Each structure stands twice: as structure tokens, then as C-alpha cells.
Image (cartoon, rainbow, N blue to C red; front, side, top):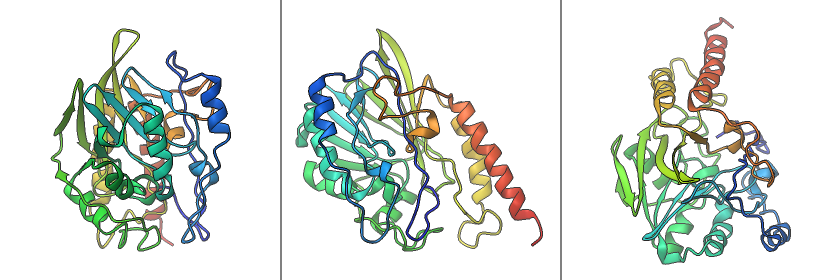
Length: 301
């Protein structure tokens, strides 16, 4: 999650990728053009791009982008059901259910919901989606606690960014997998942005060739206290380990919760990923910003 102000203003990320499997029918484009931007919450506001619908598009043979212009959500479709990664803001639940229907996924066919980190802009609609579909939610123990609190008592944001509480059905260990049909989804613990941050990898196919996809969690530290944090004393150590983990992920194609962090512009149907970057470059850029932030906090005031 990016820094929030009052009213909370947030830098946006938009994403995209030029793929031969993009949805391109005029009917789909017309339908999306008629969709209203999702309303703001009363408790806090975010950049409008986080709420603006875009047409779903195909990333690879089994992988679809179903998020908004500024927040990623990825659907993995198989012959035996589907998996959803992230959901965006709380008010995105109905939009996501509509996207699933458009792609031929009935409510009972969504088997698993997983996420990157338990902030309102990514885990916001998970409870509603869980109720509507019966899908099971898989996460780790750290994130399960924050999900159950609906984002309250956050280490950095306190009670500022609440969302409907979520019940976890399965607690994962680092490196554990979820298998559905031909897709094997691997969980990678990447703490830092939150203590329970998760990244995901899977192998899909495109143009008849294997494609290793990484959905790497956010690596920013928006206004975080990185030194002598009373509740997260090893936060800097966790970030360092996470940078190394991200660099080592199998990563032919990188996706991120805020799409523009990995060069995506989902609203651009002709060139949805004009500037793709590697997992290594993503981690290197984030570590450079982290070093600068940490250095500034070490200076005497």
C-alpha cells in the first residue's frame, strides 16, 4: 500500500502488456466504457484510477487480468476451477463477480482466493467474494491475523484503512503450493511491506511455450519507521531478505499488486505493458529507494 493522506491520496499504479491474447471485441470495449467508476468509501478516499474499470485481458493461456486501471487482480482458469489473486478495494466485489461471469467462471467454480498483502486496496473485497462464491482463502499466519481484524491495528496505519474482516481457510508455509488442474501456484513469503506479505509464482503457457509468471508483492515502505520500530524491530532485515527472494523468483513475466510498478498500463488495450521489467530490476529499484529512505532516517534531526 502506498502512503495515505487525509483525505487519503495515493499514488496510482496502472499496468498493461501487449499480448496476442488480449480481449479485443468491440462489445467488450463498449461494455467497459459504459461501466461507472466505483464509488469512493466514506472512511477514506483513494486515487480514482484504483476504482476505474478496465476490460479484462488475457496474460497467458490460463491467466487473465481482471483488476481495475490501478489495482491488479489476476484470475487463473483451469478445467477444474479457478484461482483469484488479489481483489482491489472493498467496493470492487460486484465488479469482480461480473468479470468472472464474463470469462465463463461461475461462482461455484472459483475454488481458491489468495492475496499479496492484507491492506484494504488488495484484500478489500475478499470477504464478499468468499461469501458469494464459497471459495477457500489461503494465506499465511501473519496475514491471517490482519485479515481477521479487517486491517485494524495495522503496524503502520493503525485503524485508518479498514476493510471487511476475512476468515482464512488454509494457512500456508513458505514454499507451499496450491494445485488446481494444470496450475501449480507456489507461495513465497516476502515480508516487509507487511509482516505477512506474499508473492506467488506459477508456470503458464503462451504461444505454445512455457511462461514462468511471478506476482511479486509490493516492496515500498510508505512513510514507515524502519529503525527501532517497537512492534517490528527486524523490519529492515525482512526487507533485505525479501529483495533477495524476489530477485531469485522464476520470472519470465512480472506482475505486481500496483500494476505500474512492473510496467503495466491496463487501460491501454493496444500496449498494456509498454515497459516490462524483470524481477531483479524490480527488487533493485525498490532496494535503492529503501536504502535512501533508511539513510534519511539515520541522519540526526
